[in-house]
Length: 371
Ligand SMILES: Cc1ncc(COP(=O)(O)O)c(C=O)c1O
Image 1 (tube, helix red, strand yellow):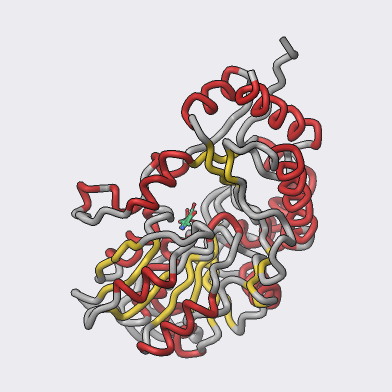
Image 2: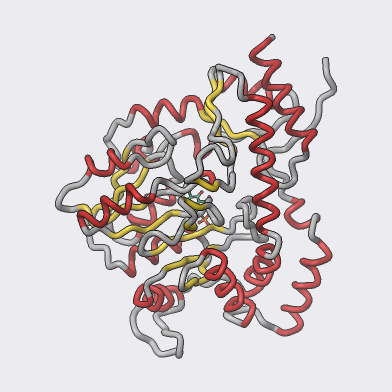
């Protein structure tokens, strides 16, 4: 019996402890300046986020869910308006449509496990006003196909890019294709803060102004009230932490891509598994591996085996697609998504994972199928 090694799915204390000195220095600096709400650290972070993604505007918000909701509110969603989403996403994607006043319509995933453009086209009707593709697990959808549908039918596109900061499709950053997009800075995200946080990007000046108003009590950038609004601001302190992390963000992405390549190399020959695409396996995609989500035969037994051997895994979102939350009123049946959720499992994927951890995880997986 090999020695058991502890490989947590995500080691939350290390979000703080690995950079403790720098984070304390930033905390002290912000604290001494009393710079808590909408100060220069926030505007600097917003500029940094816009520059990083290539978007024209960025607004720090309380979390990505709010960012998505505010985007749809700014697009003036009305009761009865339908927005097509993939059922393989966090419920937050759909709930943002509901809280903004519309109706989410979950559809099937395609061969890449992201929203299927053919399913989007099939779900269209006279109530459809928008599409919200989720750039899931750090991979950007085929945005040429999505934007072609949106252009043809004159639909809005808001990207749920909560998991995809830095991800690119044909060289262009996730979040910059549609009308607006939201990123999440939840601690376990590739760019993670020390609490909740989110950012909206848009290339539309009118949407920037509206979302800005909506997230700050209806005030415009001069402090003048223009509409009803609410408070969904990103804390200045979180913004300061996030700007610090953004400086080394490309290293974090490079490390995740290295880990993904190792998983591919050490697990790629197992027929019982369907792995996510390896880095650079498709020149159109630059993936940032927010998660390493694969599909596995005998998934639940594999998960138990990994847990008993010290390896943390995750089956995301309670193991259900959006449309499977029947209490929320969904009645559709989407076999591909349902099948996906029977087999999906995430292995540890973050910068706290060492090469030896990956080897141990892969050996443990191999022992399960080969014993
Ligand atoms: C795909 C997706 N959408 C939306 C969200 C919501 O982000 P937040 O927790 O910042 O509201 C998440 C967060 O995990 C997510 O993974």
